[in-house]
Every structure is written in C-alpha cells, then in structure tokens.
Image (tube, rainbow over all chains, first blue to last red; front, side, top):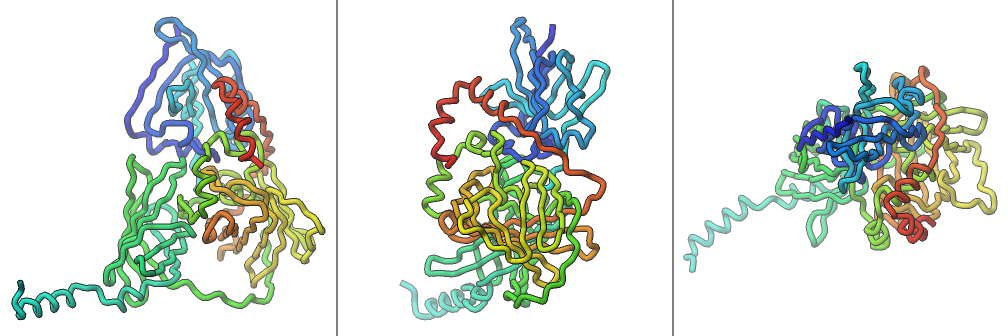
Length: 130
Length: 344
C-alpha cells in the first residue's frame, strides 16, 4: 500500500528554496514556502505543457483511501534545458515526489524532486535570476 | 520653572544636538545607489524629497521609509524575493563629501537567502544631450543574469490603481496562467527565459521565448498606422544615443506590471535603454514604465543578460487546460467569469 509521507518542516530548505522552482508565477500565491511534504504514488496524468508541467499522482493514505495530488514542475521550456523531457515521467510510473505544499490544505505540491524506485532523481531546481 | 542659567544650558544642548539644517538638505535630490554583497550587485535610483510633512523617499519609483538626522540616513526598502514574498533591505549610512556610504541589512519574517552588505550613493548625473549614433551589434541570444534589480515591491500608485490592485487575486487574475500574454512591461523584466535579437536594415526584432512573443522595433522612424490598436507589445521606435539603444514603446494595452498585479492602462508607454558591457558579452537595460493613470512616478526595472550562443529559443506551447481545470475542480468557474471586467 502506498503511503503518504508528509514531512512538514517549519523552516529551512532555503538553499533549494522555492526560488528555484518558480519560473514566472507567484509561488507565494499558491504554495507555502516553509512547509514541504513527500508523497509516493502512481502517475495517472502527465501535462508537459506551459505554463507549468503538471503530474497527477494517485496516493493511498493509511486508511486505504486514494487521493489525487496535483504536482507541478517548472515550465517545460526550462525543464528540457536540464534534460527533463516529456518522456521523463510517464503515466503508470511509481514515483516519490518531494515538494512545497499548497495553501489551504489543497492536494497541491510544487515539485522539488521526483525519485524513481531505482533511485533515479529528477530535480526541478533552477537558479533563477531575479 | 528653570532658572535662566539652566535655560541657556538647555538651549546650548539643543543647538549641539539638533541636526544642522544644511547637513540634512544635502540629502535632497536623486541618487544612484549600488548595493554590494556576496550576491550580484544591485543598482537603483533613490529619490529624496523634503516637504512640510518631512522627508519622502522613493526607490525605483516606489515609496520607501526614510529617516534623516544630521549626516545619518536610514532607508527601508520593501522588495520581493524570487518567490514573491516581501522582505526589507534596510540601508543605514552617512553623507560624507557628497557621497552616501553605509551598510545594509535584511529584515523579513521568515529566513532568507538575501544577503546583507555595503552600499554607496552618488548624485545622479544630469541628462546629457543625445550623442551621435554609434550602433553596436546586439544580435544574438541573451540569457538572463543575476542581480542588478532591486525587485522593489510597492509602487507609487494613484487612488484608481490602488482600488484596482486591492481587488487583485494573485494567480486567478494573472494573464499568463491562462496563457494570455502578460505584456512587454512584465515580460522584459522576467528572469527565467532567454530572448533573441535579430538585426535587419532599419529594424530590430526581439524574439522572446516566453509566450513566443515577437516585438518589432523600428529604427527608421516608421510611423504608426493611423489607427493601431493598443497591444501587449505596443508599438516601438528606437534610436541610438551613442552606443546605447533607446526604445520608445507606445500604445500598450491594459495589462499588469508583474505577477503582483499592479495595473497598466491602455495607452501606457515604456522607455528602455540598452547598452553592452565592456566585454560585449553582457547586455544591460533600464526600463521605465510611464502610465500616469496608475503611477504617480514611473516604476523602474533593471536587467542584465549574457550572450549565449550555446542555447536556442525553445518553443513555448501553452495550454490553459491546467488553469481552467483547477478552477473547475475547486468550483470557482463562476468567480472567474464574474471577474471578466478585470480582463478588459
């Protein structure tokens, strides 16, 4: 059974902070800068389109209830420069996603990393100039 | 009651401790300030004015808190970090030999990657006459570089703009989340995407990766058609002031200045000045937005790019599905359509 691993940290993660995952939208409008979480589940939909790549992930909690998370990566045109392509994450993939949690308790996450069962890690991190 | 001798003593102390008016008035005027830290340098325009109400300060066109006493000055500048969160740069310094010198610190509610450092200020040079044209080669692909811009948060909005902005819903009202153009005033200042400059006789063409926008900039004075609708890119003419390219863009369409959502009105204009670094590998710009309907003084942005022949301009296919789907899932579609008047 898949598990939700919500590891909320009050502060920190500044060196790989939200600045590195925001392209041109206001991260502040939708996400919590100081609270991160980790989910594991199966990719059910892939949207590799601007303004943001988006992956829907089905996650089972401890009670066996399945919930769908909306996880968002950077703009595809920025991701591809790091080797993260449309084929990097596919429907049916088992993934563990670590990212910033959405506001208002929504099942929303801004991706920091995506980890595959073989240990491969995709990092959505960008040293964005201001 | 004080006896006379004590009165004289108090007056003497007051004279000694009261800042000299001449020292304070030395601050008034326009200053170019530079901030240095472990990060890339930052440049900005500091304007200091004194009225009956006291000192008023502005950085990059936006209001700041200013305290001046004798030769000492403190300026508190609200800025946004790369994620959109507000923090403050607090500049403390002194006026010595006609220059401002000091140290700045960072204040914010949460921990920050912003660095403290030192700062200096010199009088802004008066406007110079336009030099003879000495065009330089700006062609190529330019990638945003770090630093330069203050990222000043609040601007000097008119009451009309304050009212509009007070009802702005970040994310839901931002044009580009639904794949609508955010407009050149915001686009030119974004730091994530490269753009390409093409040079042809009498014209420059700027190709922006974000939104796949195209901008035609006429160097030969090609006039606007009799009627040219306001648009997100506006209508641009340019000239060379020595080796600096000056672009005057008019007829901008109503939009927002950045994702914070401060408005731009139909017919606003923009003034940009571009110049190459000494090595020819960096491109610098200062960008002023002129929109008296919404701003009592022009907001200023500064940008720097590096020449990057190794990259290409990537396609920017945009699909608003993700935006509308979220609205639908959250039961907010009605709210979106009820706010249609804000998108005119």
